[in-house]
Length: 177
Ligand SMILES: CC(C)(COP(=O)(O)OP(=O)(O)OC[C@H]1O[C@@H](n2cnc3c(N)ncnc32)[C@H](O)[C@@H]1OP(=O)(O)O)[C@@H](O)C(=O)NCCC(=O)NCCS
Image 1 (spheres, rainbow, N blue to C red):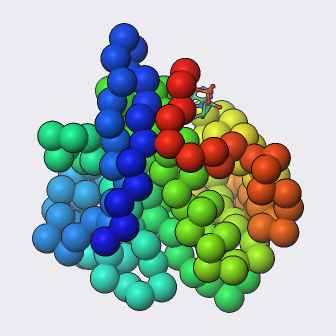
Image 2: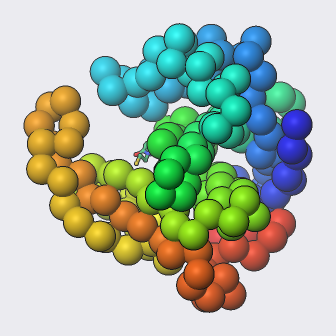
């Protein structure tokens, strides 16, 4: 199980956040979190359980020092490289740097594995996520019409892992805000 510690600012104080692998026994917890974050788009417990145990996936949680999981993300290895297939933070913990910590870990894992490209889909109106992805060097490659079940389009965003790692926001540890 990988453990990556980071500190993020939670208004007046610092939060210790550990990005770690989720366990199969935590699938129900992850499904509850998923439902709070994504509502009707949420993955169910079967999908999450499959992602946690799949050898080609890494399903990571953002754990506070009291053990509470406040966000999670999932990275999948596919033919064309790595695909970020999930990323979410509980509403009460947003804008404190936790999404950035998880992204940093996924980009690190992708690069470390030798993937030449990382990709993802994001709703075209999801400015928060698009800003976050851009800050890591992801660029919009194309718009995919009717991508989501409600008919909304996605931006397909991609990061070439050959690009200069120093130019993106992947510095380790403390992220002061
Ligand atoms: C997208 C999401 C994961 C970001 O998580 P977070 O912990 O709030 O993000 P961070 O605090 O690490 O913010 C990192 C950067 O993201 C961008 N960002 C985050 N929230 C933003 C907002 N509300 N508006 C604009 N930009 C935002 C900013 O660039 C921010 O950097 P800054 O704080 O230096 O300005 C979170 O908003 C979320 O869970 N949203 C719902 C689920 C979702 O849309 N997931 C993505 C699916 S593709």
